[in-house]
Image 1 (cartoon, rainbow, N blue to C red):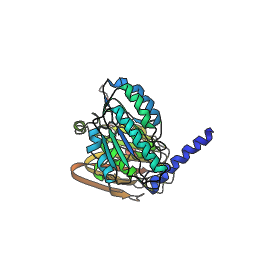
Image 2 (image 1 turned 180 degrees about the vertical axis):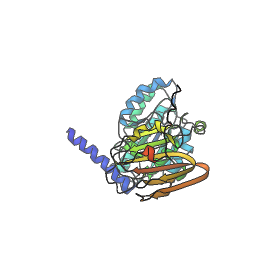
Image 3 (image 1 turned 135 degrees about the vertical axis):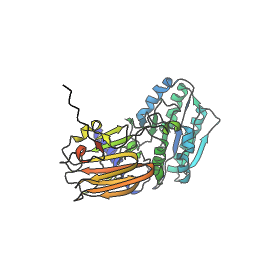
Image 4 (image 1 turned 90 degrees about the vertical axis):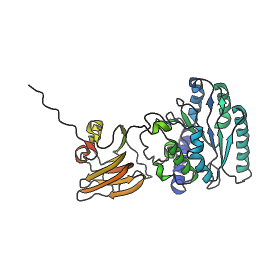
Length: 380
């Protein structure tokens, strides 16, 4: 019985990955092809200190993926991208206001049950629904009402309106349960994620990526930028210190026939991820472990620059994107290669390098890493 359950889980993960690759639209189990999931955005407003709600939220954590550093306010969900994306995809938006949390959850339960029956038993096609519930609730009421909704087949974003409490994503058969991620997320990432779920392209200018692979445990998760250092508020976003992210890939094949671009949908995943509170070049002492290599390695760098000059040694492959658009690509050049750019304003720059196994990136890639200065001899 245990092996059958494991097989079913693996088959479900493979099925989701196939849908992502072929259709770019997730389907609920049993629905017709192209069906879009109902979405519940539950944003309880607290009437007591956050600690009073932690026990209830810990229980719900067993059903989905917990993101302790991903705050999503009601105003941001409605005005900064998610709702406009869902509206464009044909969703019927249902804001629930001016009734108690308890009455609202009861009504939502009835609505979801009716939609379930008509969808599965009567085969009636319905416009997808996005219900937004944000009302005051006590810890006791939250514990009693959440089970009414969490067993539905909808995609649920449980986002308490308090920075110290985690956001939980629940979606039966798709979001991997009991998963815990420390990754911080901006509103733009939820826009890109919901866009992928409903089959729309995400806004390219935001620089954000979908976190659906992270939530489902299936597919390649493109790296996200450094989390906001001062919190997920709009004012903090303008005061974030410059930061660079470096991802190290050491599981490349000995003979790598392609540049594993960070948009690649293969199973390639970073073995290490490092955030550095500076822009390029990075001090060598911050990345000493990159020198420990026994195979071809890939290096992904995401930073913000206004000008940059890249000089590649022979046999170093490279893909560079600026604001999400490819601007430079070279595969195993026989000679030294140089590329540079200059912009009026700082731009998001992404670079993926494939370095031969015999090459030390700390010494051969000076545009990325600054060698440590030799210590001055002690005076006699």
